[in-house]
Image 1: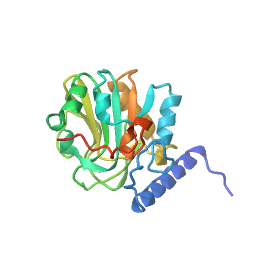
Image 2: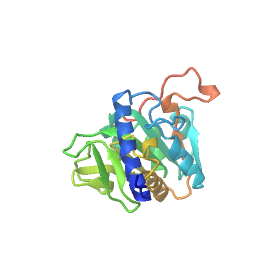
Image 3: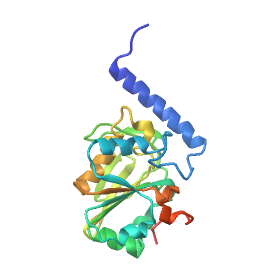
Image 4: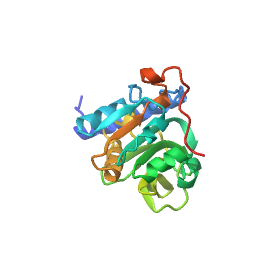
Length: 232
């Protein structure tokens, strides 16, 4: 039997990852832990979190209500929220965010929201979008169809990832919650892309991953409800 080349193995790995992720979505991708850095399922972010640690970034998990982060007065920080179910994109527009979050961003911080609900386009569910870091695998037909000043990842169907300035800070939105999911740890440029998005906006800044959103709590927070969204 002919031995597969490294390139063929990478391609095969990418196909298998896409298949596993697809069936993961069918079998209950809306679990509250979907997108958590604590899980190793295809829709989790444990591998990306480890990748960022190994790259020397100041990344940590946030296991308290997010308003406590907003009240700390920090600048140059990033809060990453990987939604376990799609949230309305318009709720994250600068003028519609709730006041604590808006003020936090205006001071010069960044919030990244993966998994906003935009219109379904004619794009195929599985696609690859070219970027400077390599091809980024996308598992959604949803695109932001309106014109934006700062598209970070787009194809002819519209933007997959884009940003908006709010005061001194930025709001970054993505139509897929699986942008750097465990399914893409081999092959595609997804891990590098999300890393670049965050570090280009806040070089050397601390990165917080919202785990309170997925039901993980510090001891002082146990017994409290799930974090709600911050739009409106």
